[in-house]
Image (cartoon, rainbow, N blue to C red; front, side, top):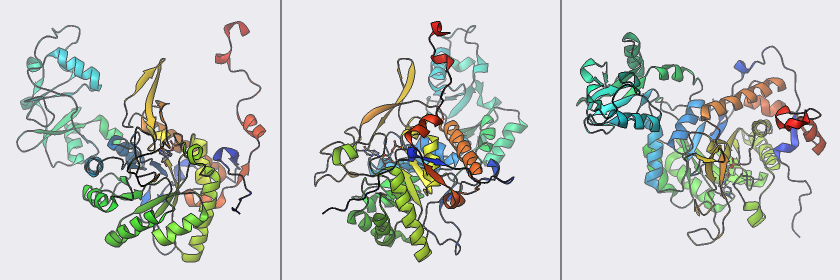
Length: 504
Ligand code: IMP
């Protein structure tokens, strides 16, 4: 007879944290969210590869492109660039993140000197940027001739059919610098010359990038920025269990910091084989994650046989996921995290090795993120949360006066990531395990993550802890009844904006 686990599969929504003693040291500015993503021996060695904040983005086409990876690394987390694309395309995305130099931006608004003021206006409306580089052929990396800004012409007074030639500030009158200049030198030039923008050109005068004065303040507002040893932004990438050797070689060449075997069910010999082969080739310097799993025995297997650095937990809880409906497999995310966290702690006691775990999928609110971390997750992976932001790779659409972004599962027909879902020997999906949907647009990633982190730190202070490790050790959680959930929402008060006019 099958083994029947008599415990109900629980979700994060069913738990609440109890406050602990908050001392005068428990201030948000004293909370450290630094968290490991590589196995290590606490007490014997320092934390190795880590995140500065415990957030990573899902390896999905609708989520983790280079723009989002840059924005998330600047906040202290990491993206996992999706693997459901060619090796070359994925490596190119990783390279784009690694080559991103904070403060040096590629000009996205460029015109040839023959363009008209009308063209300049159209471009400004499209990009939202008012600094336009005038280059020999209008391309971003051709010879720089000058800069046109909104101060150089009057939209309502000048004849817009005129050529930009008579309006832009020519190179001779601009302050510019040559490629190789440091950000500090470039910033000093901007400051000394009281300029807003400094073009950077190569030896032949071709435009390379622009440095803006406003980005100086911007740079200062990212104290948690996650970088590698060479001060380049940190980025992860997903792998499948088919072309992992070739893919990893290309990703390493592009500068990837961490890879993760991405499978809907990672408790498999396929995954262990792939991880072991990668470990044999690259040794301990390569951070290798694995998953997904939902039970203690699977954690043991990943730790001992696959020898991975971190393990992702979660099957069937994703917002776009229909695996549980399609196949009857999965586990409530809270039960999965609690079971695996317990196995991780036992493994640490036995071996002295700490293997971080990541709660992946189904986190629909900041409170669920907080509960996941309290229950033992070292970091969380989110898809929907990031798909909603400005920086996700999709275009916004307007529907009935509200903005939305498309969001589809890797197991949907749109993504066709058959390597993630081993359904048969066929190299394609036979049935879908994910849906193709829309999520409301939520604005810039920086603002959204900023608010979530303030809430997380505030809760940690209520609980009386200053680190993620302490959070795991000291958090006390209580199960809630349905009535407790009702009591926790607004009750017995009237929300005036929901009342009909004749009700008052
Ligand atoms: P979300 O944060 O709830 O949107 O869940 C994101 C997670 O769902 C990803 O990190 C994957 O683990 C998982 N996932 C992605 N695509 C699919 C799918 O098509 N079916 C099932 N799970 C998926």
